[in-house]
Amino acid sequence: MCVLRDAFDFESPSEIANLIVDENLEAALALHLYRGGRLLQGGHGIPFGVIFGGTDLNEDANHEEKKEVMGKVLEEARFAVAFTEAMKDTAQLQWPHATGKIFVQSQGIATIPNADFNWNTFLQQSEIDQSADNLYIFLVICGLRPVKDPLYLVDAFSEWHQETPNVYMVIVGPEVDPVFTREVKDRVRRAAGVRLIREMNQEDLHAVVKSCFALVNSSVSEGMSAAILEGNGFGSSRASQEHPRELSCGRARSHGIAVFKPSAEFIQLAKRLVSDPALEKEIVTNGREYVRMHHSWQVERDTYQRLIRKLETNLEV
Image (cartoon, rainbow, N blue to C red):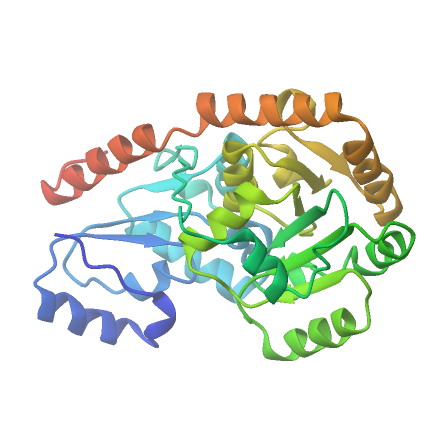
């Protein structure tokens, strides 16, 4: 039996200790070395493993206090999982004592779109003009926090929408940072052709991903974007801001990715995708194949089942 808990619901390791006793838990798996792993410190009496998040390596490792905590977590953890070889290499440079504990397992992708989802209702709720011919919806999925930089393309996209009214950008995600969320809402309110939607349940969000024209990632720091990979699996075009983490899972069209850096370059790329069906088809086809070859949820499932068995039997990985 698996007990799933949100790390944000706990403030200290002692609360986790109580959970372990109350639920009679035998092993643990923490997602995010700092966010989840720090709660398992201190000898709770059960073996545990951790899974790196992009924030761990790209952001938290730059803060000495957090880096020290994460190093101690790795000392106690039986194993640590990184999504890419690049993430593994970075982690081993940061915490050499963990070399040998860290291995790579790519994130598996499983998509469950809501078959009853009504696309026209979604467009109506998003205040998108459905009368326009050939609507092109560019979707940004992210928590509203600075590192995801959902505002990066807002002004450039708004200018494009005023020239081409059938293109829209829709930002979907939870309000993670309250101060930044207010800034996002204010900017979007004044930007033509840009819409902001509150977070959605996974099945509905997958239905939106399946129906939109292209999925966009403008994050300034990324481990491995599940949303982008899910978009590849569904057959959405993919455009990503160029940065090392994202490129580690596929740099060019051969992996179903169209890379941009400045916002003006994104608009040029987006216009090409809209006007060149052959290019769009190439990116979609290659993206699907990349996910099929490298992001099997069955392989990921089998890997974690094997790891949990080793935790339960107290064997070395």
